[in-house]
Length: 169
Image 1 (tube, one colour):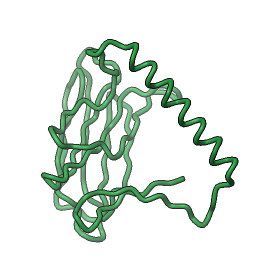
Image 2: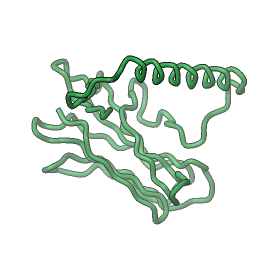
Image 3: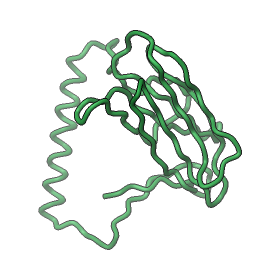
């Protein structure tokens, strides 16, 4: 089901499921729930066996700062099956700001990387960080969008690029 991210009356993002009038059959719901529980159990097993200091390559790295919660991520593919980097969009209810950072999946030699964060359909200024980086580009910050505007973000690594739009109040 599609998920829409909105800003509620307390200036906090909230998740809303869009059902478009469809309802799940009971058996399908149970199958989905069972599958999700199996994935969670496997994830818990893997987390329990991994060293505490290990970090997942390309995972959100906390670059936006304390109190930022990731709401969206956009993969940047270098082929049909390989994700070279991911752009993460996070929000802080304390700062009332959005943040974006593009994180490389496998840190290595310096390569061109970029992250942008902006508003759509109109913009006063794009928050952008671009350069030659080994691990990540950003973070960049924007205030909550005005009513009727959405956040847009993009990321690139080397010649690969991806963008997305959402987070509309």
